[in-house]
Picture 1: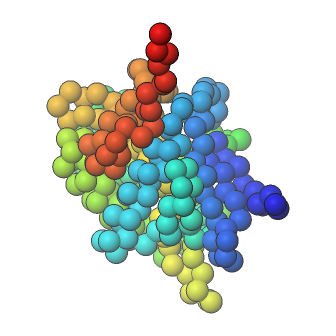
Picture 2 (picture 1 turned 30 degrees about the vertical axis):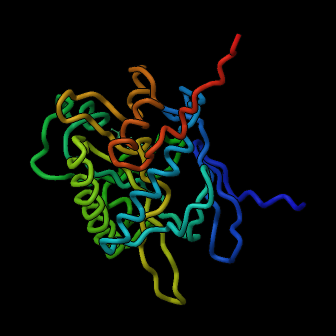
Length: 253
Ligand code: C5P
């Protein structure tokens, strides 16, 4: 049997050539990394949860008319996606101060922002994904002014959708990151939400208790990451059974 072609391996996912031209298979690994991969671990079941959660969010976005790269889930860890040209920017939307924004501006974590704030970081691990201004993006040709306007609009629609969805299950969407890709139709391009949307790329706090249900649990050693992600999936009804936490066989004497 021929081995399928690996296109790219990232920190949490692998991309393989898809069954048809213009498609990729996106495989979700169990690897967790933080602080630009200075901290690493393998969290059993994380890939399964993120595959399901990302599918759930992307399908939801499609139903409200936000285009994404998602085509269909193939199995527990893989989904079929459209091949897109990733814009080399991380698009971050923040509703409350946390993480690097709190550090940068001296704001207490959890401070409500006057309105959602969209930030851009240049995707380059060797530089630690630095925050950049729209001026840099246009001057260095990473995107056009029109792309930027479209990216902000897309990111704010994702924020409205995700905030509402999370609020409905008692979770505050503090912030999140998305990546955006160009999909070409002859000479015309469409911008679509790409990569993944999962608790790896969002900050999710329980509204009542403030408990963190996202990757900060791993970054800050706050307990079991898979328990946190399973709780998000359970509340959203994404995993009806505890599929990633299969009980270990017990020895009967
Ligand atoms: O670290 P920072 O506060 O800038 O992160 C903002 C949001 O973007 C968080 O939800 C974080 O999980 C996400 N993020 C990400 N990948 C990165 C940087 C940030 O998913 N490389």
